[in-house]
Image 1 (cartoon, rainbow, N blue to C red):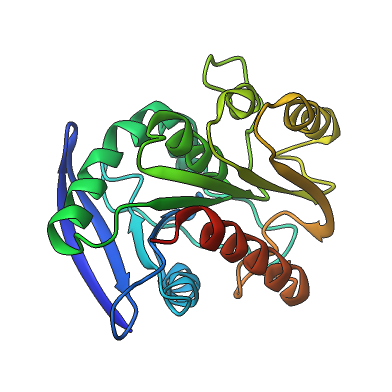
Image 2: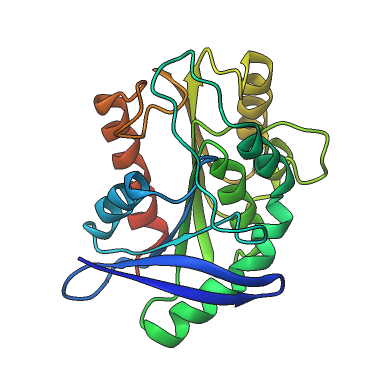
Amino acid sequence: MRHETVDLDTQDGSMRTHVFRPEGGANRGAIIFYMDVFGIREELFEMCRAFAGQNFVVYLPNLFYRVGNFSFPTPRSPDDRTDPAAITLNLETTPGMTARDLPAILAHCAANTPSVTQFGAVGYCMGGRHALKALASHPSHVNAAASIHGGRMVSNDHDSAHRLIETLCGPAYIALAQDDKACPEAHQRLIEDAVARAPVRHMSERLQAHHGWSFPNRYCHDAAVAAHCFDRVVTLFNRSCGD
């Protein structure tokens, strides 16, 4: 597995991005991995390596690059509070911003792996809504998206994730957590209603696991549910994004 760090020029500055390449070359397209609120860390590298192990090139951009390469301590128990600075960055980093960044990733891939032209976008927690925005804003390159225990998926913004669902040209997979303060019951119903109305066939499912189940080092990690979602995402991207 090859892991390199590159600084990509975007409209708003230099975006530090980690790129993971499978040994022997990729033949299954590329994945943009949208991070959670705690920022870039080894835990995310491990998850990216798992996707690269399925023969995808994986791009992991630092979504907070406009203000710095921040990362924050992850919660070790349900009582741990998220750093207020992380919450502020979550709110200030909009899907419109990350959609604006995406051409830099596409250009880097075209220059360095020209055989790979199709992308999937997957986001965890905060990253879920950014993954859906990637599919909505760049359908000629991003063919599918997945949101895993996405947070703040419903808002009054015009590009709120629940509104984007009905506009997507490619399929999306949306995994919802139980007892999720970041995506409560009322918001989950809105998401499910949007999935049911969408002209493209999407998939949403509620899973008996808590927000953050995907992260190996998190107190709420659920290995079985994480594996289930990983398989769902790989199947979706193999079908929609494989070259």
